[in-house]
Length: 137
Image (cartoon, rainbow, N blue to C red; front, side):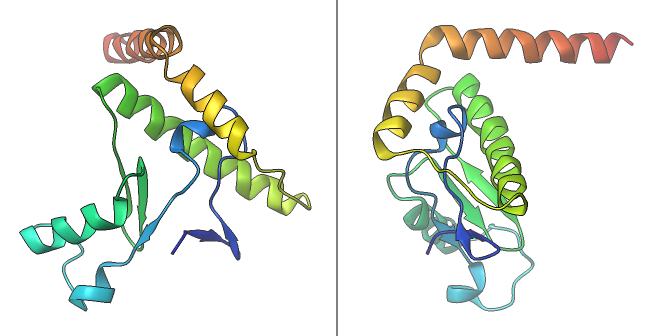
């Protein structure tokens, strides 16, 4: 079941959000485990979450947040940041009257381009520089 923002499934709506991939599944811990402490601590909970993620890069977790995957720490951070920004853009577009989601081909092409070494390393350098400055200040 895809995550919805006011009845609309979360989907890539900008080129950087394309790194989420075309499908963003949804996981509700209550479906299998009832009321819990909301922490994925038991092996069976982890397996359930992993099944929901499947071959995708992001799974949204009801009442909890999201789980994001990547092939490197830099890619994971890139995908996490731009998935959040994509959700914000989608919500804003919805309030303005409509969403123009990316096509499957745009998701594939933009996602592949953004995950190349140069865009990832430039973003990583920017974020780590900002972090060092913030820690120094």
